[in-house]
Image (cartoon, rainbow, N blue to C red):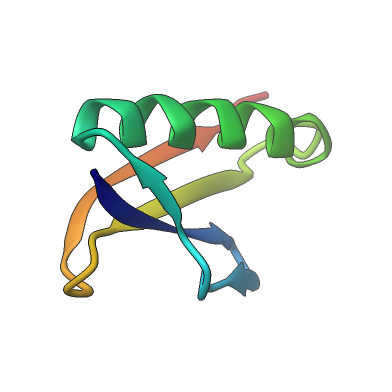
Length: 73
């Protein structure tokens, strides 16, 4: 089991995860990030050209991957 941290980036607004979530592996972390972005995207996606992203870090602080969502007109 590993602890992953999910940092949200929504243009001029961002939030750094200081608690994290314990998950089995990077695949489970990717699924968690996609679900989190989907739930955050409802408001952001209404603005054409909006970009919402999530950086996923491991326990060492290293970025494991980045998931992003862009709204187009």
